[in-house]
Picture (cartoon, rainbow, N blue to C red):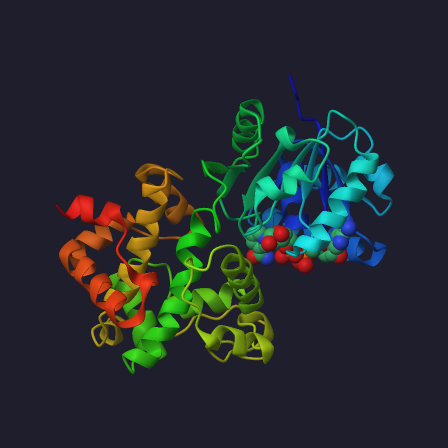
Length: 382
Ligand SMILES: NC(=O)c1ccc[n+]([C@@H]2O[C@H](COP(=O)([O-])OP(=O)(O)OC[C@H]3O[C@@H](n4cnc5c(N)ncnc54)[C@H](O)[C@@H]3O)[C@@H](O)[C@H]2O)c1
């Protein structure tokens, strides 16, 4: 039986430092490892800042915050970082070549008992696992940004991952106060990104095809589709570098998963990365403050987001047809990972399943196979 006491987080960037903080909060001893001391210093400052905010909001006491901080040890030396660790959580940049190099290095020092988990958003778990010395003890644990606040973690076994590892991971995620959703198959985009990323491209096509304004589309997505914000707004919030890289990886593995729109690549090349760079789909103020786009129900009335609803429904249907998740887990993942306020198929029913099917059939005739309706939609419509 594997028990987890000590966790090593590789990579102290956006995700790594947050995951370290979350796990330290419930008592795990954490080693946070990065390639340069200055990166670790920066990460520890961010953790301190975040804990300070929690003290301010009276979510933890100052002495608890100090203990949480004290349980995280920043280390540059990989051998030292891996000593005695039960679980390695890898959160290095999303680049398969880099990840391969990192796992080869980790394999040289990790003890036999260490379980490997990758926080990848898009890379195949099975492929990474099979490159390591322990494919059956390798799993995907996909946290969402920011890990301190986002409740969802997708748990993705590769084709060689043991059921013991799956159960261990589900327990661990619950232990750290998060909600796991089991992504039963190691498919491109897992559950949430399989729905979210293609929608950004689809919304960009809506700009061209329907000659609609961005705020009209976003208002319709927010007020008619029960999204927490508009789709362009959500993409800007996520970061268009994250969106572009995820799109690229997803398309490289499955050409049918996204109908790529050139605007995403263009914005990325122009370093318009969304909120964090001051502009993306929208322009933002220069004070680096989180800003919401002005969207309204009145604007929403000017646009019918049926193409966006239809693509979301079709990708969700694909997940169900292929046994990646059931409807309950799909709803949970979209609610907790994307902030959807209603179950997706309730939204589909509000628009009309018949209309969704017809839209997909028309679009597939006009724009190609990407839009071909999935068998699940036909089944529930009959
Ligand atoms: N940013 C997001 O929104 C998000 C959300 C979910 C999952 N992810 C995934 O999490 C992973 C990390 O993404 P991120 O956004 O935190 O990246 P990031 O670039 O912010 O951080 C990566 C960190 O890894 C460090 N690093 C590089 N090589 C290393 C090595 N050999 N050992 C240890 N550290 C090393 C870098 O110096 C950097 O500090 C990626 O796989 C990404 O797809 C990202």
